[in-house]
Length: 468
Image (cartoon, rainbow, N blue to C red; front, side):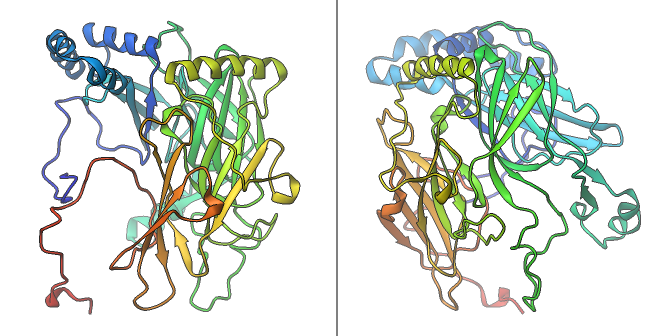
């Protein structure tokens, strides 16, 4: 697809590197430390093995052929920038299921688009899995598999005849446990050979994860996620008569939670961090897979234990990375954080001057919230964090937020630009769009201009294509 015009060009397997037909909705960009970068270089020089051997071997040969000349040509700041770019890794996955059960395939690409690793794993004991997102730690890919069951009778009598969607054939089973599935990342600098693990957690369903990281040498994992305490795939929050309100009084709610997984005992402890409902997490991608201290979300403005509403606020949530850990794990984490800061040159995030904490603010201990209410009849999409060029502090940058204005006919869409460290001060600037901006789901940021030529004629709706 052409990223500027959105024109579909052709189907590609990226030189034979991709065997499957689908990717999951989300990916992670992991910034590797110096040791990981050296391991990546060795991986590119060595012949690949496994299912992706053919594509990866060709990519490694090409990389080796150009390594000397590119290294000789790089100098000064350009060389430093190139080294920084080489440290980033795109991690994504596919989730497939059928009559033979469910499986996941994980991919790691470098910035040149070369496939570094491809690993395939069966999801044990899972017949059908709806997995929208993943987490990545130093040694693991992490999937949160909620207790979902297929209604075979409904599938046969309704779905096959076009009377319902496939999602409406799924049922959430709160009596069952959620499974935290850990699959080892290959080629890590530690050289550890780790088996896959499956840990049971309190029932919940997760669409979107925040971040995950390790403590105590990888024996403890900290996993932050937006978890539904229950989910109904047939749930309709609205109806034309406005008579159905149970979607906003109790029922399934999205809660920001921290799961602490102890691999020695096999136990997973779940802690709710906020009272209000949130969705669409964003973090500073430079700390992906490492301890983080801040994240941004869209949230409702109700902040109540039972009542909730559609998202009309944006919040910045400060969290102690050691929250939920014992003294030994917390001490280990502090050492890990210091090493990570030395590797990446990032300082801990700044505390927001307008942040509120404690039970009155609807937060767990060790959590603070800074909020901006967007206004009545105003509904945001996914926030996007943009780091300030040259910044050395986690969370130093801007937050972009597209907003749907439902005020009435002719209401324009907006894009707000916030100081990411001070949401409660309001937007630094607002872009007023010449058209509506529908309620949206996901987005991404790139510093490169990705749009048609500014001098090209603006799109106009053809008279023959108007809705009937």
